[in-house]
Length: 301
Image 1 (spheres, rainbow, N blue to C red):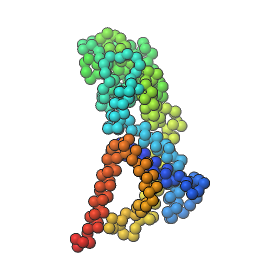
Image 2 (image 1 turned 120 degrees about the horizontal axis):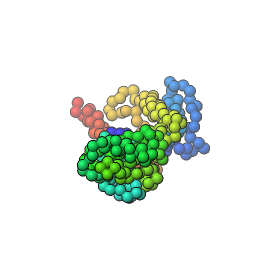
Image 3 (image 1 turned 135 degrees about the vertical axis):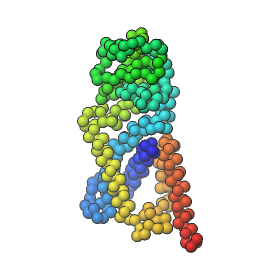
Image 4 (image 1 turned 180 degrees about the vertical axis):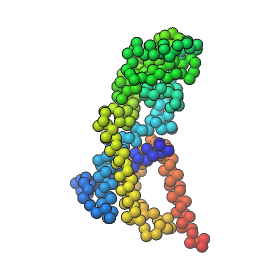
């Protein structure tokens, strides 16, 4: 569901920008000129101005949130691994595997979620003390979290809980040998992992401190304003009776240029985000069925 919503957010941003873009005038709507909320122009201008000034933040939130999605995120993880863009440069044991969110150490970063390093099968008594000692000896920044491995042959993981992506650091420790198997930091990430992790930390509002959180908050408020103003625009132009399949939508454009523009914007995004494309197909089929039902009602009577 999150993936579908984020995908449609991107589609709405792209199509909204196309509608706003000035064609027969020097500039599009950049300020709220209509002041009467009882009339539709007020809500139209509010929608346009909000989208203009915070639409980029909303788009950023949607794009950077996509790696968390179940299907698209899985495919991106596979592409990052296959291209060697996320694997740390340091030699490591074990293999990259996708892990459930509850099974990976927090703070290690999204692209390191599935990194599994193997340790000796027999875990010694006092393993926690050994792991903590290794983390302190390696000067791992506090606070950090220690993850107990689910498998007896996997390493323990100590990850620094950081606010900035460049401070990311994870120690993979084998208490049986009292040794750090791997010490992985942001500098060892590939370009794909660096870009994704930077986006996620910024999305969460921690990368640039308080200003980061205020900007992301503005984007969230913008989403509410866009939704409310869009609903009000529809309400102002709704047909007197919501019957016979009429919902107040504008007429389908006749010009081939507009049809081509819509396809040029929507089709690539639906291919890039398959769940969004699938939901579009479902919506088109549902719309067709609803129209058929409404048109057949008088004949049935």
